[in-house]
Image (cartoon, rainbow, N blue to C red; front, side, top):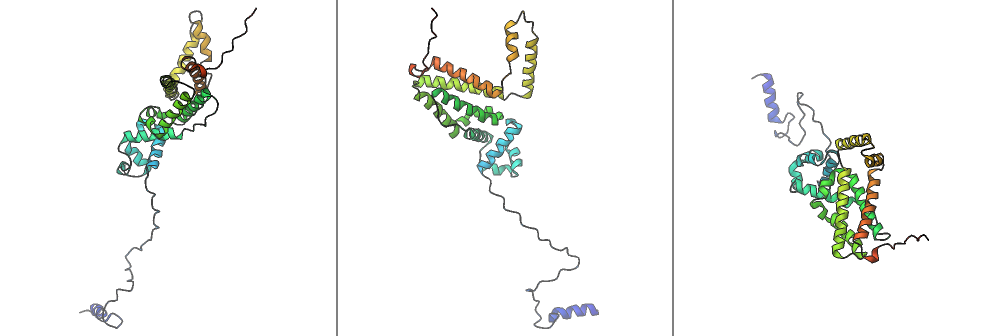
Length: 267
């Protein structure tokens, strides 16, 4: 036996320093020279639990920037840095997710308190609705679906019907008035959310109308210069006033109509 082996055996038997001969495992063992030093990494902060509000907010952000077609549960999971299964704990499928996105847009609409007569109240509500849509123009097709039956949409429905019923509209007249305002607002939303390609087509169409021979198309040539002179919001408000005036003339009960002052007759 070599001196090195004899020394190692003696150290193991005697504890290398005398004593009981048992190896003391309670003391730290020095690392051999070839071992890499252990680096203590700071612990990552615990990720907050994923919630439905967080999911809906991220989904709406995707719709706002990329459109409805770009939204998928996998795309949403990538944005939230979670697995798709984490999202399925909160929503069943994309259809439910889109409903929640639309409901969030309705809930975000800041409808002012009731002021003025029924005409002004209807105007204020629909201006607020259109402004809310303008903040999320890619959500038009979502808002006309099941999302409008969420708490935000159904509350707006009740608010509009209450204004009309409070002005004396019979139930059938109130529904007709509501439906007219709904179709008008929906059409305005659709028009306002047109693609850049569509807007370019409109621009080219206007240029074409301005080039038509005035002797054959005098009315078009007279009107074409004023097309597009208003912003989308201004145009909506002008047409909303026209729509409400039509509702007043056609559907409002006599007590809800403005008094008509006839112009004095000339002698």
